[in-house]
Length: 413
Image 1 (cartoon, rainbow, N blue to C red):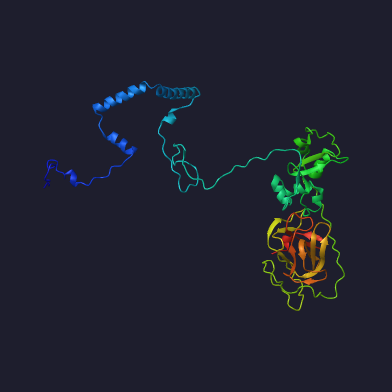
Image 2: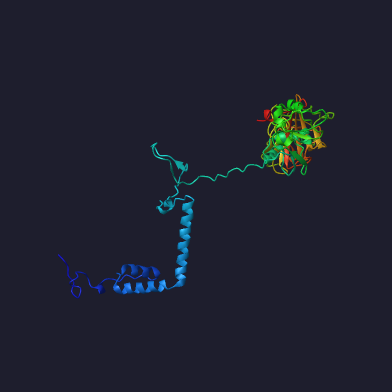
């Protein structure tokens, strides 16, 4: 049953306006635009629109602005059509793509072979930076050694093998560990051997010596031989042998002069665990009564970052760590060298473990043992430094068997 209201709104079957709460009308430009859209286009509004149009048609500035826009659009369309640009693609409505929260690839194909591949928009999980090609050069350059450098790091700078750096520098070849800051090195353009021509050198002789084909030498642009294997070489000329291998000369046994043995272990030698909190120093196997001997098994003398591994030209381990870090004996034995080494090792300690086995610890900032002292495995012998020919604080650790350098990895756990 319909409900009727008493009053002027009786015929409309709705409550009077005064009984309906009035909704606040929004103010501003948006409200005015909404009201204009909602009002019908009455004759009065038609007349107002005609008056506005007539005024704009007589506004020279307005007409000039719109004419300029039309001219630009026509020129763009004409030039694009002349160059074969299809504007229909840009006039079609384009879908909106949203980045997916997880996306493995950007491209995906449909299951049907008849359908073309489509592009699926997705977020890449990482940023891919393309590698820039290195500048091509055919001539050797020079480089000054900086702090922390070694042949491996320098080789990485120039995209070369460490052996290439060592073979090109006679001083480094004799002992690659003995680099010094500010030292000038020759950097070849490519991996191989950079040979300085001497009397009676020939292209065929160099090819046989470094185990490459003659054409490798004659066709290399930096050698300027023009492919002629019979062209004479000039004494002092530098010839690049790409891919060449330097003949291996086994290092001479290291002679370590051992002083006369002391009558007994010196009292000054520490035989118990030193007072240090470094993780590199562990409890010695010795007791308060003294030396207990070699165990026959080496341990790490210090913890740190290996900056140079053993190689044919550097049969040792370089372990970098902070200045002053304690260094311990790799195994028990008798100290046969403790002092300054003039060949570039700086403050050095050498321990004889018996059966022809010795270990060398170089570049110390200080050492706490003397020649003739007996030390146990894990006992403090010195602290990390950068003395001698060194580019930064590190330990140069060698293992010698009957005077010949051994690969330390074969002796460490």
